Amino acid sequence: MKLLRVGPAGAERPAVLDESGTPRDLSGLAKDIDGALLGDEAALAGIRAALASGELPALDAADSRIGPPLGRIGKIVCIGLNYHDHATETGAAIPQEPILFMKAPDTVVGPDDTVLVPRGSEKTDWEVELAVVIGRTARYLESDEEALASVAGYAIAHDVSERAFQIERGGQWDKGKNCETFNPLGPWLVTADEIPDPQALALRLWVNGELKQDGTTADQIFPVAQVVRYLSQFMPLYPGDVINTGTPAGVALGQPEPKPYLRAGDVVELEIDGLGRQRQEFKDA
Image (cartoon, rainbow, N blue to C red; front, side):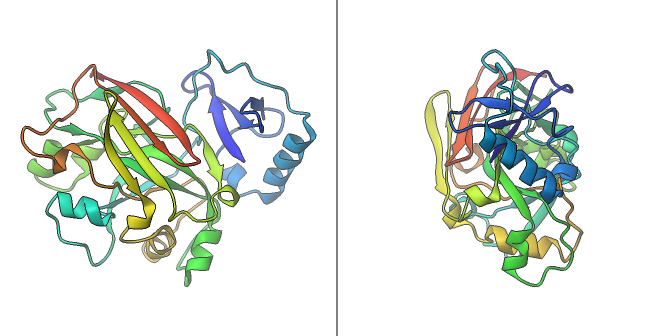
């Protein structure tokens, strides 16, 4: 299934796409698309049955905002330098273990919402990423099979980053990763049964119509199953948690001087096979 949330920010209603791409209202079956729903197999089975029966009312989404496909996110755990080509372009050594950092859930906005360039920023950068959404509590997992069984689905994440804040201002990466609006998510949460191999997805990103990133999850240093299993050794993962799994080559940081960092007025578009497409205009904060 392709689950989504439609409506004004803070007042989105849950929906599911039918085979024609029409959003169908789930308000009668679910309060929201969140960890509580994703962890309830009976509720998900009920949604599948209702979708198959054609009984769900259609939503007129032509002029409606699509919000993040997941509400009440618990935590966002991110993996840095997780593509061979991205590590190479930035001159970084291939990590021996996954590099972890966190993003606050309040950085999440809808897939087509405005993204704000922070005040004082000169190095705002783009990063298309595969987001993994957890659907089953994961603690001390022992196998890749257990790890993938804990995944509810996948989505597109845009891990927007301010490189000067991240790298040049001391401390950890958090200052450059947690700026307002720095994690567009969606448009859909695609359930795991529709993505049989998360290591076979193409990722692309354009800035002002120019293709900048064109990669594949097959190039990940630490595949999805390994990342989920690894994280579960250090922290419990709960339904509604999100993992951003890294970005392929093509970011501004890895390009020759003068590096083409983002400015107000720029438009970024990104897509991942089977997971939809995002479009954001950047404006000054």
